[in-house]
Length: 347
Ligand code: OGA
Ligand code: NI
Image (tube, rainbow, N blue to C red; front, top):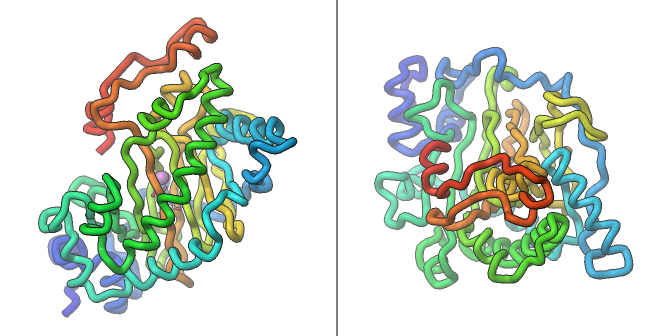
């Protein structure tokens, strides 16, 4: 039976501890958002005031062809300014993108017991984690989101440990995306004056994770967020979003993309993928590429899914601006650190 969601403890037990998630709460019939999910006014998203980011998606099939330089320039310009861009002809099959979205809906429609086996403290494998919000034990206001996260070590372990309902499409998505990621990094590193070896790119994307995010419908979308403002910690993130929309990015500096501090929406584009720069790539580039803050709104009409791939260096990696860039810039904006220490702060 669904508890009274006005009581913080029973809400926490039902949603987090017992693994029902926000979806379970919504399915139990809910006409208003519980207090625990109400964002303070400055974190609420005024959708009527945000512009849409109108830049056309970048056509990656042109890399390596006669228009290579122009396309490379578009990628660099987007990474330097907004830190977000969309790509098409990216090599990830379009019907796979459709299967991924369907599979995510099917997975979150499973009975809570099926998903709850992967809750953090009971999951049979450290590679897979099912959860809700971000760190519900610590957040002041909870996020209107459930998720499952799958770490990639190698194919054999993924086949053995990832939930079988979502395993095969997720693996295929990761495999096809990674060849695109390598091409993008090649372009972004070359622009920094680095002649990237394969082994260097291997280090930058050593850790990989596929997530599925589920944002249930929300009775009061103006009071909540699907994901609150954050930047991604890693190197590059690949994101598949569905047609609902609601992903907003904060403009870091005045540019052709808008005014500093303004939020723009990355609109859904059929068969496109969203790419964004993470904190580690910002540091490596000595601040040239922007790891922009972003957040997601909720809606009252339809549940939304998104499927990001996060890439990052190994936790033991030492991270600092690349020497080629520091030499050119004549200064360094960041002191060297170990990624594991940075991660402790992040969470
Ligand atoms: C994330 C994220 C955006 C989205 O998972 O880090 O920013 O559209 N997701 O779901
Ligand atoms: Ni993010």
